[in-house]
Image 1 (cartoon, one colour):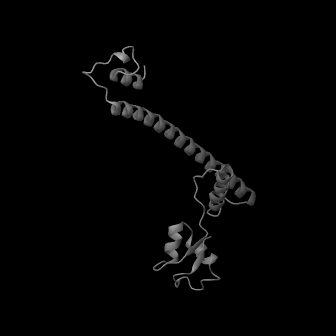
Image 2 (cartoon, rainbow, N blue to C red):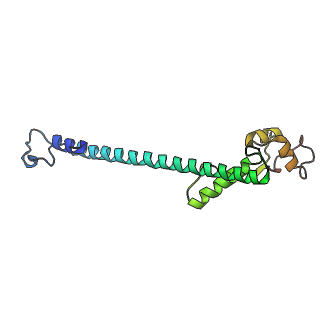
Length: 159
């Protein structure tokens, strides 16, 4: 007998003596409906947990596939699989894999441009986006002749 069956029996619903309730013990309808809602909430919570665990497993599989694809591509190009230039390829592959399934992936879309704001520095931007300062300076050498002087509103490309 389940939890709801016990609640119903204790409140006088659905038992053999359902029609023989006395006036001395009136049934509280709100308690019965609250018990039913609580039971439904437990079922939904269990389903949500299973769905989130399945989504996490899917994201882990996508990331592993992206890492493997990036390592294979790096090997074909003669690069070390853990080299900094290989990591953006892994992120791109994970995003493409997520787009193919129609589900959001574990990897957020990669930012390729940054608009300089008041107080920003090249080193601060490099640290914020996890890129090498030298690579950031080299990527923007055509638009930023002096990396020590950047201005609000400038658009920097990330390597």
